[in-house]
Image 1: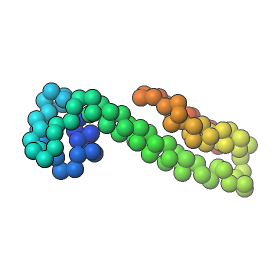
Image 2 (image 1 turned 90 degrees about the vertical axis):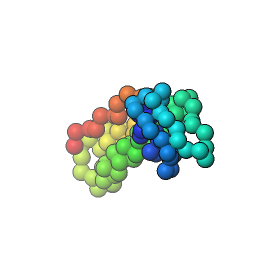
Image 3 (image 1 turned 135 degrees about the horizontal axis):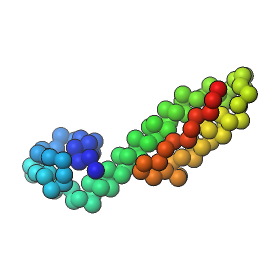
Length: 105
């Protein structure tokens, strides 16, 4: 888990000192309690899902042109299948999973 990434993403202007582990997190913000380790893990999972969706969305945008009716490709169906796999990817995603392989144009 990347503690610093989670803190920067989900805790606006927090007052904290941190090393690389939860145990090294010194919470200085008196306006809210220190998040638990479990809360931090959940937020990290949410962050990873969000990053995956952003990358997936970019891959879809990058391949939008392949779905146009006048796209000249012998692999048109392969591109359509690839784009469907990208749309379905969040439902089968797990940490470390690879995105579908882009077809050859």
